[in-house]
Image (cartoon, rainbow, N blue to C red; front, side):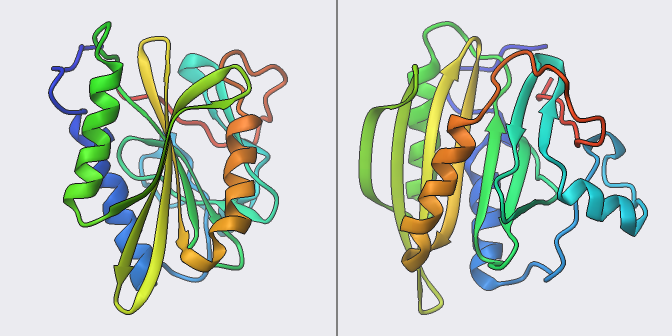
Length: 215
């Protein structure tokens, strides 16, 4: 695994990959039917029954580091883009999505710079900072939680992110939804983070999708 230069996050992990998906959601361009993906298949089609099973699996396992991201009730697992290890979409709201991203290894002492770079890229794409909460804690883990606003095609959207440095990697959790649903979905967002199994997921569900961190 290679160490990344300290200037900007690696391209697949960057904020622009996250923002591209946000704009797709704002346009409502995703299909109505949510499907799951076996990341090991790298996009190869699978049977419809397997799709349905994986979309409603209990969790997504990141086997290489023993982490597990639990699927919140009422949400389904959908295919993840570059740099993301888990993506969930509200079953009844095609514009609401929670994504979990994991960086490559980063240099010691560069975590704050990575987080700032991620935040700057979001603002460069037209998102404005609504609320910035530094050292926001979920249990013993802390990170910067920032809520951004965006008006797009006559609608108002919110993007909430929480960036947390764990070991030699950066985790970024993000929630994208319409402004009027932020309060309700924030509870789900908090649940996803609070119920994370960061290392060593015992008794993993054999049917759960798996994802590998970037190399």
